[in-house]
Length: 506
Image (cartoon, rainbow, N blue to C red; front, side, top):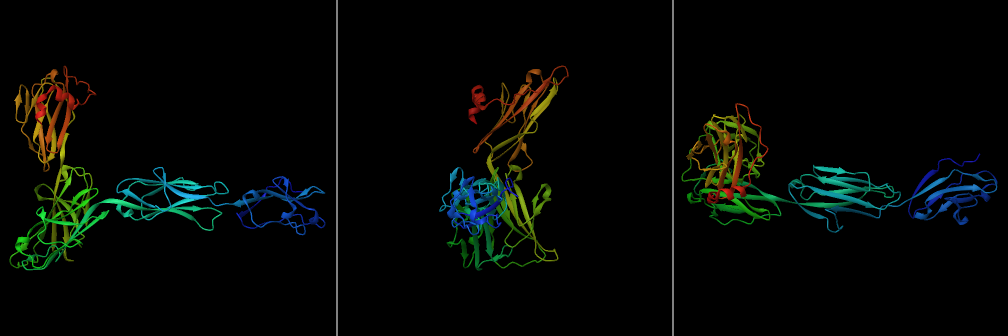
C-alpha cells in the first residue's frame, strides 16, 4: 500500500550535525532500487546507502532542510515523507535602550532614581523562524515584561529605586538549536540623592559630661558616592573629621555644645542631614531612671520635596505628630517616616517614641522640628461664590510662604487693596494666623453686593522666593435667582500688570 498524502514525519537536527533518515520501504528486492527525492527532485545517489536505503547527511546544512521521501521507481511506491528541519540558533542577541543598541562590552547603564527604564531585547535570525523564546530576569521588584515568547521583547521598570543599583537585568534566549539559554544583560547604575545616617558614641540618650570621649559618625548613602562634611551651628566643625565621617572628641567640653549636622555635595545638588543638638554638661547629672528623656533635632525641606525622618540608631519606635494642645497624632511604626510631596501644612514637631524596657514604663522621645521652605502657595477656601444682590459676602484664601511674604494684595477689576484697608464697600481684613506654621488667612468682605460686583477677585502674594496668585469668581443673581457660573476663571498676570502698574511694587 502506498503512502502518498500522509502527513510528513518531522525530524530535527542541528546545523553541521549528522542526520540519518530511514527509507521505510524494506520489502525484499526493493532496497537495491530505491531513490530519494528532496522537495520533489531526485537527490544525488551518494547521499544514501543502497544496501540499507538509509539517507545519511554527515554535516546538515540549511539547504538540506525540506521534505525527503524515498520511492521505488519501478512500481511508483513511496514511503512516508520526512520533513527535515535544520536548526540554526539566532545570529545575534542584543539589548536596545532609547533606540540605541548596546555594545556587549558596555553594559553598565546610568539611570536616575524615581525614573522609568524601558529595555528591548532582540533576537535576530534563527531556524525555524519564530522558535526563539525570550524571558526576563531581574533581582528585585518592579519589572514588567511585554511581548515575551517572541524574538522581540520589552521590559519596563516603572519606578527605579536605589535597591536596583548594581542589579543585573537579564534577557534569556531559549531556542531548540541551543543546548542551554543564551543571554544579554546590563547592570543598573542608579544615581540617587544622598541620605544620611547619624550615630553617636556613647549612644543618643546618654548624658554627656565634660572630659568624656565622644564620637559622632555620619554615613552618606548616595550614588555617585558623596563625602560627608560636618558642620556646627552652620559653621565648620570644632575638631577635624576623618575621611570616613567621624568627629572624634578626645575630651569634650562645654564649648562643643551646639547644633550639629552632616552635609554633602552631590551632582544632584547640596544636601544636609537633620540637625542634632549636642548637649555637654559641666557635672555628671543625677539620673532619674523614671524620667522621660527627650532628644531634639531639626530638619528643613523644600515645599513639594521629600524627606525621611529617622529614629535614633537601634530604635524601632513609632512615629507621631504633635497637634494642637500638644496632643499626639499617631502616624505609624518606625524606624523611618517618609514624607513625599511635602506641604507647608506638614511643618511642625514629629516624635519617635522608643520603649527602653520590656515593662514599657520607661520611654525615650526623639523630637524632630520639621521646617518647610519654598515659594508662596495660595489656596482659595471657595473658588466660586454665589450671592444675591443686597447681601454681604466674604472671600477667603489661605496662603503659605517661608521665608515670610513681603507683599500681599487683593485685586478687583478696578481696585487694589492691601490687608487692613477699606474702600467704598470693600474691606480687606488684616491677615490672621493659619492652621499651620508659615500660613495665614486673608479675607475680603463685600457689603451690599450689587450686580456690578460680579466678576473675578484675585489675591496676590510675593516673597523672596517668588510670586503666587489665586482667583475667585463671584456670581451675583438678579431678583433672587442665582446667576449661571461663568466658564472664565482667571486673567493673566500680564493683564494685571498693564491695568494696575502699582502691582510692580510687589
